[in-house]
Length: 405
Image 1 (tube, one colour):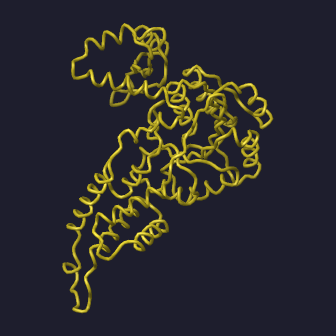
Image 2: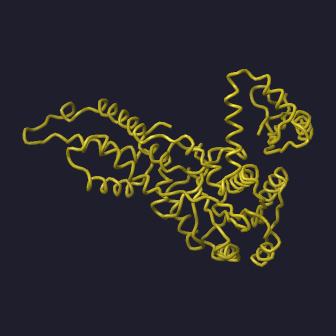
Image 3: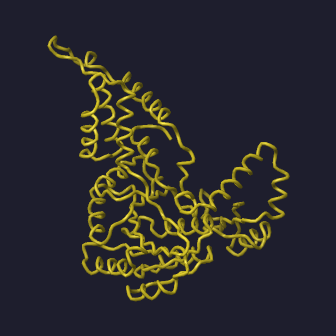
C-alpha cells in the first residue's frame, strides 16, 4: 500500500491531484484543513490536505520503486510484507498489535530500569551524608532502598497510592532482605504485567455480525477513535464495516462521522431509539462489524442513563461488544465517577485516548485495578487511521517503572 499527502486550495483540487498521480483506485483516508501560522498568517490562505492511499501497484509506484536507491528496497519489501500479513489474520488483534512487533526481552527492560535506579541511588544523598547516624541505628538494606525507589517511581507516574502500596506489599511478601535489584525489579515487573492482564480487542468472525458500542463522556475522542478502528478494519482486514450514530444531541458529531463514512465509502445510519436499533440489526446483518457512536451523557441523569442502557441491551449479549472510551488526561477522581456510572449500564473493555497529551500513564493501571475491565486500545494523536494501537501490558509496565521507550 502506498500512502501520500496532497495539498491544494480546495478539497476538490487536492482530490484531483491524488487521482492524477495515484490513479482512479485511490482511497482517501483523511481530509483536514491547515490554517496558516506565523507573523504573516493574515496574508496567507488556508489549504486542504488530503491523505490518499492505493492498494494496487500503479505506474507511479513502479516508477518510484525502480528509481529508489538500493537502501530503500528493504523498506518497500517490509511494507509489502506487513500489509500482506495484516490482511490475513482472523481477528483484529493482529492488525493493531504494533507494540508486539517491537517486542523487547525482559532482560533488556530490567537492565534499563536497573541502570536508572542505580544512577538515582548515586545521586541521592545517603543517610550518612544528610544526618548523623547513632551507633544503635542500622543502615537501610539495599533491597529496601530499591523498593522505596520503585514506589516513588510509581507515584511520580500518577499511580494511586492505594495501588502502589498494594503492589509493594505483595512484593515485600515474596522477596528476601538480601535480594538484589534485578530480582526485585523482575518481581514487580511481572506483577504489573499480571495486574494489567491480557488485552481484549475487536474480533471478526465470518458469518457473524458484531455490534460494537462506544460509550464515554463528551470530549474524550469517541468519534475519532471509531473512525480509526473503522478504517483499520476495512483497509487492514477487508472487513465489511458500517457506522451507526446515536449521538443525536450533537449535529457536529453526526457530520464528523458522516465525513469519515464518505471517505471510507461505508454506510452511516442515525439511530434515534432502541426500537430503530432493533430494526437496523436486521438490515445490517450481512456486515462483519457495525461500530456505534453514542452520546456523552451526564450519568447522574437517570433518564439519559436509561437511554444508553436500552440502546445497548436492544442487541443480544452474544452479538455485542462495549468499549468505554476514557482520556488518559482525566483526573483519577473523575475517572472513578465515570467508570462507576457506566458499570451500572454494562460490562465494558477500556480504551484510553490522548496519551500524547500526558507524560504519566498511571491512570491506565489505576482504572484497570479499580474496574478489572479488560484493556483494549490506546490512541496518541488525531491522525486517521493512524495513532491507534493495541495496549501492550509489557510496554505499560516498563514505562511505569521508568523504562525508556
